[in-house]
Length: 246
Image (cartoon, rainbow, N blue to C red; front, side, top):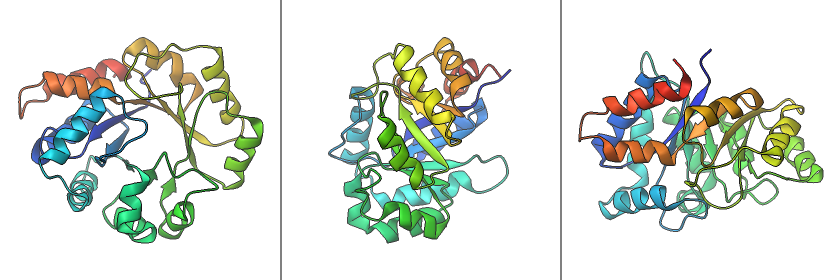
């Protein structure tokens, strides 16, 4: 049985045109969802692999406007999959919260993942997403208290994102009692769950998949992109197929 996968990639990395090819290769490999990160100069959750890719994109002059254009290109037409835009509060503030949400919707995004705009202090992001018909995805960590879960659920999210460990992305995550128990606690609340941070191989996907609705792979996607010659992302599509079991 194939597992449901969300693959994370960087808008503008290795280049704008190449990152479009990366997104299409991820879909061709069987990804059910895309998480496209808009590079930001002061991230809080990016590990070294993702941070280096974002830095390269920014050094090449990548701008937010181009991310919306890429989103439009990747979500248009037959064979596309839902795309979630991920970035940080500074990007959203610069555009204006309501303006950013409106542009994301117009570009075809299904939702927004902004880790540092948490429910209760999100500067109106959840309300702007509701207005536009976008999913606003809160990010939680293992061991989140029952009280905090109640606060999150009270905002009636369709999706929540569980970072499978504290800290930054990239390092291999061990599946243990705490992170799996947190997934199950959230699942009992009836929300859809995307789970990631440090997922690198098929065995990890298989361990997490029964406890959530989409398993996220990010840093290992970027490592695989780095191993591909420009314009040829067959190896990336093949990697995605190994993760999903398709």
